[in-house]
Image (tube, helix red, strand yellow):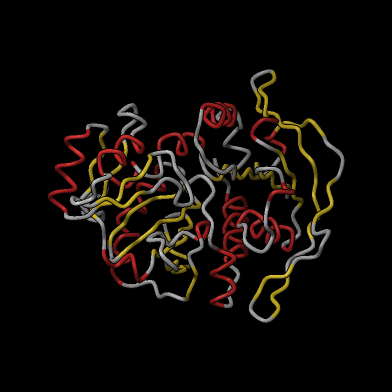
Length: 325
């Protein structure tokens, strides 16, 4: 089978960390062809989605003394070809946020991939529907106290009522722009102005969960079912546990509460075609649903001695063999 991955430029990826690389390695290991493209290389021609694609061969990373080690030349690219994406059995949209206008236009182009011929991971309509902050709001029994607003007074009243809160830009990623707010902070008005870009953009404001100091659990869901988890623990003076800002990772169990949250999400994720998803849980509360390019499986594999990428690709194989129409 042929699998296409829409990613950021491959030379920017970290083979020892990036989930996209782990997925590609797993597919290659099962005998599939891997083709690469970027969101800016998509087109519609005669009513069909096309892409400028390059085949790639990967040298898989190796686990050495608890670390993933990659060869210096860990990938080899072939010649570019302009091909209809329906020639691929699966297309993985793995471009990193922000979800901006070019990103949205790319999802519109992916609407013209024939879903009867090609599995799209994740669905372009689902990607548009699922803002990674806002999507969680529909699961009211799973989330902490949360508001979305750009109104300073509403934010101040919420922070006063909660005693402490975190402010999140709706389009952020990897912990970028997340601010801690408490009533006695003389900078609170300025923080609100910065976060809302002078009251021009709504932001998410969530009750601060003291359990955050013990970690921010990332759970990977495959078609609504949990297949692995890793805990991201703040280090130093930063209250955020995201790996991108220096959080350390540790083994963690998937609890009964976690499974209850996954069960609440499963039917909605399947309805929206959100096959590969990473959810974030702090202290038994759902805080985000990550659908664009969820990461974490390299860390899960290293800590748990599993191969989440292979689990994903075997599911893809079985789905394609069973027919996706």
